[in-house]
Length: 365
Image (tube, rainbow, N blue to C red; front, side, top):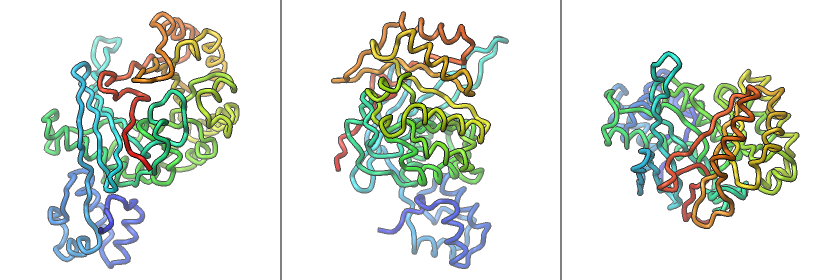
């Protein structure tokens, strides 16, 4: 099997082209065909010479991901994709159309289409509230498999006729919040970010991409020094406000204590000039007390941040329960009254097991 050209980083593809005596400007042409126009054959790259196309065909193939299953929620329009990988493993992604919110002046903000993508088959982090953790880690995804989820989703939207331009509708926002820990697959994820944001690549705004982590402190610091990492948004999956409480639900805390993770986030905000988003999954009787709200307020007091409260999404056999709406609102208003930027993020796709923490497949080692 030839190498999938989608697995080459931008710098690796450029180096290969120069080694073969091809022109540097061919790089931008190839990237546009691969990522903007989503071609599946080198013969479709009509502004390349026939000789250049033959060289590419000799060494590479273009291998897209095709969804083997699609489940669309009749409630909110979210679509969950099951993508089959070349080795037979599978991963899930979720496409979420989000209607623009009403502004103070009476107008509505732009609609957006957010795609939640995976970075690994399974996950090694073992978070107690996450269904993906039950799979354990099977393997990292390649760059082509990460970007292939975006290309596959955009192909689906074009076929579904939900957009207007000549290439079909486009994903406007990306969140690395699907299966896996993105910073555990650090090099591949950062290479993917470069092509996601490149004007000749998929071309999504850096400010519309979020990478979520459970708290790998060394990688958070490293991410701040990496150009793609410093420009996209970083989210920390917090989920507890004490050291012991976090150990109970997030085993990674035994390796990277909460204090160390918060310090890494502070370093990230100073270097990148970005704030950090704290993702806080609310579980009844576990982390939804006002004492927890007070501790979050204290954590955020001297750290540029915002807080997303995520009511726990139950699934068959899930070990926790969702808090009452009264508890959620009480927690929210405590933080809002203290001038924290806080939102309640009610997950989409609950009825098709596509919500936050619900993704899992049957892939085994």
